[in-house]
Length: 296
Image (cartoon, rainbow, N blue to C red; front, side, top):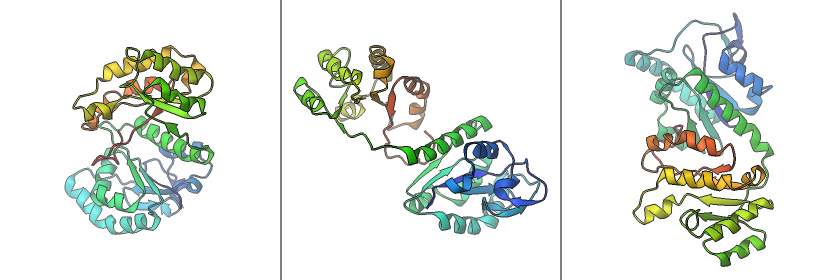
């Protein structure tokens, strides 16, 4: 089964009757078609229509001029009208082997949330991604859609996963490097101020094509009742990257620092994370969260 993608309808439409994928000619549909020759061959593409509810991209529709309701009572009426068929359609394409991605503006997302709770979605799919931003501009939505398409199309070309021997904390454990293993350590074990000789040896592996990951030490700190200092972590990461050639830096995998207690705090370091990704590879830790389906 194909992964499921849900996007909104749009005001820009061809006149007459067409398949939904052809009827809508707005910016998100143009982006979808510019990236994929036949979007429906890559995704199980569903569209949340202001008039028809949740529909398949292959359904044949006539053009219309209807906007998604904004007032709460109107949204309730919309959901009462469309929820049964919407759930029936989503159930028909759901599976515990399928990933659901939802990219909707806030007015459409408000109606979608009324029809499908987080608990409901988690019970139907392997995992769920729902794009949520406060401003939710067209540019942000297109950016989210572009990243989803890139992730989906790159899955077929992904090689074997890299398995790291983590927790290297002293020189004697460098034997794993000699054995050809990709290794990992933590800023709690070694950094530019502590056990620097170990860090030098570990970074040396990146210059010869070896892969090395460096954790930020969040879990170790939490286990000792301490909080992570984001500024210090990023200073360490940038200092380490600066010591490497561009080629070697691409063999360095940095574990992104985050905040398991506050998604808002984690979002504040977004620009710092994107800056790191220009030079090295990043590992994104996923922590259990009640709103894991939201965009973080």
